[in-house]
Length: 214
Image 1 (tube, rainbow, N blue to C red):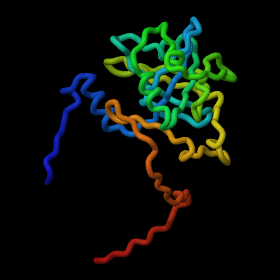
Image 2: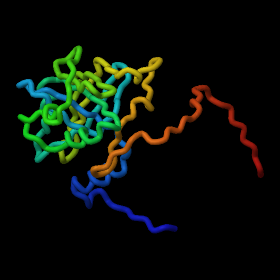
Image 3: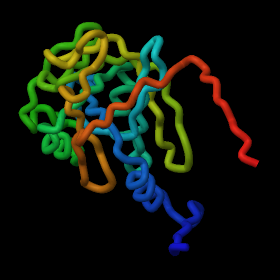
Image 4: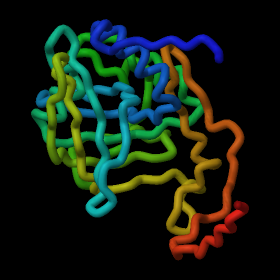
């Protein structure tokens, strides 16, 4: 038997656990979130602890940690204004996604710094990124705090889906055309890579015949 390593989570601090989790839970989709401060400044930051949590009404959830015990600009703006936009970048946008993760003062707009064009949303005041293949206008649903680090799982209801031409086809998203960007452990990212298409799983119970070989 090959040698194995076991690590008790209780022996690790928050940073140690983060390094293991972010290296094991891969690949992760990236929510490239635009928010707006109460003063009207647009903030942009990527978060890869992100998933959907409900289909009707459609809801997405993002886990946002704290910095030195304080809320980051994104979560502070979401809680204050009650809305945000989840933008989905593609493989060509990896440099700007990564640069937008840098720590900037609250008075600095990452969209202005990176020269990213904004487009108005339809039902909320917070703008979306104009060039991304997908953007989702969201209204805050709930905030749930977890653990010693007080990380927050923020759930938003999707009010409007925006698609670039060629992404939405026949009621579905063309994943190959989307070319989503994924986050790995550390400063590492990945594209979609090869796709494997399997036969659809039947929802009708199948009869299984078992033959006794004894």
